[in-house]
Image (tube, rainbow, N blue to C red):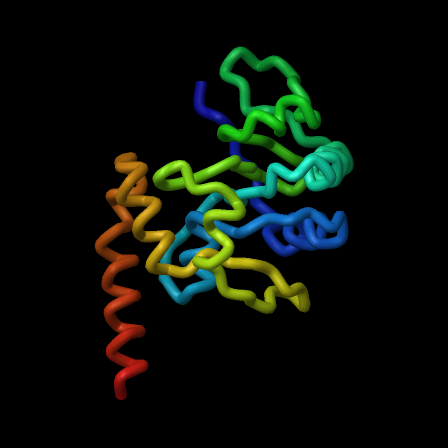
Length: 168
């Protein structure tokens, strides 16, 4: 049975993470949109810091968001510090929509690896770290999933247009 998706409240999810003092980087489709790509996405993807204090803050925010893992068996499994500590991909449903909390992306690049590949963006009055479009493209190329391949041409075109515009 297909999962029923409720609309994602991107701004509210971001606000919860920022106000919870979570160290994270927006990656994936939302990063592409914030970098000017005309794509749609149905979840917020973040890479989070694995620092112990950050894991505690993230687990607290996820509790406040009533997060549970997307589970084909329909179980209600909640994220906690021990689960988050392992990195990996935490595909979650929250009261504000889908949130994918990732320990790494691309070639196993974690939070610290990705920091030099980020820009600070103002979103709904919040200052957040966003993965550069070039790096979003690279991570999607490495992932090689069909949904990533479907958007790669559009992402590359957006990057080329932006580079041409910067040269003018």
